[in-house]
Length: 274
Image (cartoon, rainbow, N blue to C red; front, side, top):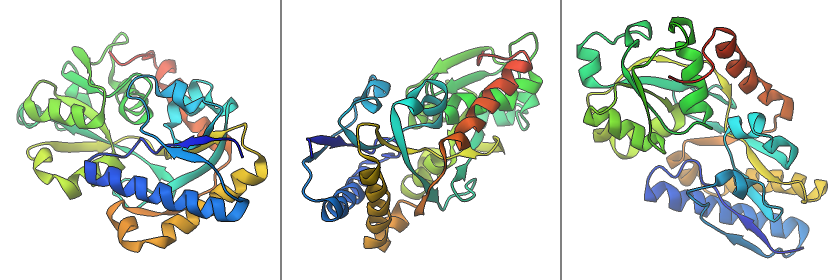
């Protein structure tokens, strides 16, 4: 096989979690090599800038993306859908997840106890190509928007952790946080969530898909799916720390729900978070 790269960039919420995800990936690649023969694979850190370009690489053996770029930005046409994780976290049901609608302590004290009551507040969002931080939030507030606007301002933070920091510091009032990220951070650093309040959950959607380049042969993609199952079973304590229960095998059209959620907001006159 040609040289490949692999990465798991999406749930490295602490350095300790990053080590565990890298360990899981290493075990997966070992199981994959046992099944298909020696494979030259470099485990890499995904670039902080253009992840979409990283996910489109022809030498990408395995990575994890968000449902929004997978379905809405054309990534599905360039990759194999390998699997979708199953997590043990509040807001997850099987391979599906939600985002928690979180408000700052100050906003809560001023009466921001429902989504409707958050109209005119300051939003914090991780990125414009995120389902959990943008698309799900847009869908949640769309019924309460007026003339295509709901928030007084929108601050793009770059990550869910940075959104939580903006809420905790009082520089933003409301945001949507991936429920898996929230659970992992609560396990590791509960102090970061002190004073923050969850006022609801967004609509359920398929979880963050594991992908491989379309240049990978179909039988090798199937071996990769089996290797993920083997890696999960190899270390029960690691799986517990990652809140990982296993993997589901969805079809690509399962992610059409991401588009349905985006279209629903647009049909209500709320095409962008603002």
